[in-house]
Structures are given as structure tokens and as C-alpha cells.
Length: 281
Length: 328
Image (cartoon, rainbow over all chains, first blue to last red):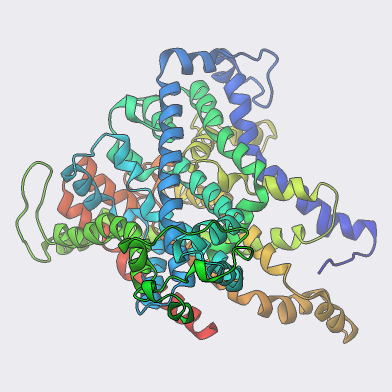
């Protein structure tokens, strides 16, 4: 539905200017992260200095981050937690999505609805009792506290997305394999699952970015500095009392954003499929 | 299954007998081994379904259903950290409704949700319409549009906090150097202004989600319909209202509902930018529940505040399910 425009002036007013404005507003905070991260402190805390660029770029803030904070440890924790919880969620979501899309059983419809409902339950509703549950299971302040709780919002999403995906794969392919002597499980694992790889990839990327970015559960369940993830570590350990260490804070924000942005940019199409698929159901 | 009759030895299983089929047919699939008892059971669809769903249902039962029930119990108890709670009926709810900070948070939650959602929908729609044109660098513009949505909200909100800094705000620097203000604006120093800032950051973060999903909706609209309307004399505005909008209404509605739930239950953006301040004037349900439960250690009271999210959530879920059913 591309709409053609009349004169160049009209095109500038109704299209080019708004587009440029939109891009600038969208990206400005990221520019701000970068410029703050490389400006030396004397410039950063000088009200007269032009804040938009610097002639003395420095890596001091990054050095601070790596030498004087546990940032490398937080990075490792985040990678570990995001990878394992994504793995668990994909495993569960793949099996559940297949069952709900393909198998005939009495509870299929109500279970599908139930999983859809859990998909809409926000962490804010559950974090207080969940903190208690995590403590009861002896998981408090360990990576497993979040690795096992992130799937509560990742599994419903993965299930929902993969269920939709399995419905697009013709049943007949599997039936052929069954006629050729493959068992039910075998047909599922070696015929349907490989065909679902694009869907798995979409769900996985989306789940990975969600667990990388999660804040509330990690804030509540992880308390010692060496257990924290990047979002929590940067937010809690680089603010001492009322003092904000803006240079290292922005350096940390930048380094914490780059990996997800990178994963995302490599798989933009898969991510967009997941995003739109998630809402369409 | 018809194959069962071919090989009577395996007749109690539903497995098709591979040996009855010429080997040349089974090219891709290796000859199956003798079925085990488990294998036979898994041939039955409802048993297989149970096995496949078990991991998911276990995790959801342990970490959603159980905490939900526990949350209801906490909300009617006087539980504080380190001491078992007693049943106190609706006392927590009574206390909430007489607490001025809570009432402010109640109001804030609705103001924050409705204003931010309306702005995100409007701007998201405009962005989607812009991105629906053909232009150079379209792919890269579309990809970078989603960045605010991709990166950890905490980290981008910290950047905004720095931009709103009392002394070093870049906005103040620009306004002062342009001669528009002579005194610094304390962006986060006043309840109403701080709420405005929170809404602005939420809109910045959430608009890409609207833009990209609405764009996906726009791309399904058949261009012929637009041409037909144009021939009939409809102008661009009429074509948008009468052709585009009705066609993308379903996806628009779903996006709005999703976004409303997320905004209504928001925690991190507000907690990072204002921590509910100044003077507890920008709390929402999420941040105030955290404040009471985690800072003041009153778990029961905190749980009762969280629970206020539930009726709203329920209305949205019921509406959404009803809408899906109706469209099926």
C-alpha cells in the first residue's frame, strides 16, 4: 500500500521531516550513552562545556568498570542465565506447542487458553510470593532463582509462537513418515522439529533478549554483588547513596545493550516475526 | 490402525509394522527397533500429550499457580519478613484505601497507563504509516526503530535519568543556550513534571512495538482497495479512516491490550527514573508494592497492593479471550 506523493515540498513536510525527526528522537539516548561513556569527568561535570561532543575521548570509565567493579562477572552471569533459561523455555515450549497444535486430546483447548492466560500475567503481580517460593526451595541468591522463574513468562510465549508455527506445517509430511514405519515420537523429532527450526530460532532470540533485559525478579532474588546480572549490577552497584557515577554508568549501559542489539541486528527478521507472531497468536 | 492386522505379534501396539512394508519405501527413516512398553504407550495421543506438556505444566504450577495462591494468602495476612503471618481478613486492603500514598499510586497507575497508551498508539501509527513507504535505507531505519524496545529498559532509562539530571541535563543546556529559560528546570523534582517525564520515556520505549506490529498489519492491506477508494474520490484522510483502519483494527486492538497490561504493571522504568519520588508522588502499584514489601519488609501489605493489579488484568484477559473466540 505504498502511497505516492505529489511535489517535493509536500513530500518533505509530510514524509522526510517526520521520518528524520522520528529517527533522531529514537536514537538520541543511545548517542547520549556513547558520548557520556567517552567524555572525561572534568568535562562531564562542567555546566559550561558543550555536552554534545568531546575533543578528549577517554576509556577511563570502561577501565573503572572492568577494574573496580564486578562488571565482567555480571556479564558472565547474564549470558549464563539468559542462555540456560532460554534453553529450558525452548525445550518446554517446543514440546508443549507441538502437543497443543498436533495432538488430539480432551484438554487441548482449555490448556491452550490457560497457557495464553499465564502469558499475560505480569511479574509485578507475583514477585512477592515468588520470592517466598524461591526461598523455600533454597534457590535465593543463586542463578537458579531466575533461571527457573524466567521460564514462567518465556514458556507461554514460546509455546504460543511454536504452536502457531506447527499449525503452518502440513500434517501430511508427518503422516508419510508414519506410514514408512516411524513411531509417533520419531516422526515428531525427526520430521516436524527440523521443519520448525525458523520458528524455534524466532522464539529463542526473543526469549534471549527478554531474559537478558529482565529486571524485577533479578532485583528481588539476587542480592550479593557477584550474583547480579548486568541490568541489576549497573543500577545498584554504580550508584552509591546519592552519588551517580555517570561515566561508568553509561559505559555499563552501553556494554549491556550492545550484545542484545547485536543478536537482534543479526536476526531482525526472526525477531520481528516473533514480535508480531506473539500478538497475533 | 490398519497395519496392526498385518503383523499379529505387535497387534497390541498402535505402531505401524515396518517389516510389512518393503524396505525400499523407508528411505529417510531407519528401521525402527522393537517397540518398548514406553514406546507403545507414547503411541497413544493423549498419553504423549501428557508427557509433552508435563515440563511446562510443572514449571507453571510451581512458579505461577502456587505463588498466585500464596499471594492471595499473604494479602490477607500480617506477614512480615522473618515472622510467620496470621490471618487478618481484609485489614491490609482497608489500610491501603486509607493510605494517601497508595491512593496517589492508584491514580498514577491509571494516568500513566492511559496517557502513555494513547500516545504510543498515535505515534506508533504515524511511524508505521511513514515506514510503509518505499525509501532508501528503509531496512536500516526500520531495524534501528526497534532499538529502544530491544535494549534493557533499565539501561536506557538510566541514560534518560542522566538527560534529566538536575544540574547537567542536556535539555536544560539546550534551552538555556537558546535563551528560552534562565533557570534550570528540575525535570524530576516535581510530581506532575516527573510523571510527564515517566510517560515520555515510556512512550519512547513502547512506540517501536506499536510501530512494528502495526506496520505488519498495514502490509496485509490490499493496495487495490486504496486505489478503488481513490477512484471513488476518497482523499488520503478518508482512505485511512474508512479503508486502512477498519482492516487493521483487530491487530491494533490486540497490541493496545498487550501494551496496556505491560504499562499498567510497569515497575522498572518508574523505579529507575524516580523510585516513586519526589515525595512518593510518582509511585504506581508495582513500585509501591516493592517499597512496602522489600524496603519496609511488610510482605502481606505489599502482596495486597500487587493484588490490585488483578481485577484490571482479569478484565483485559476476559475481553481478549472473548475477542479471539468471536474472530475464530
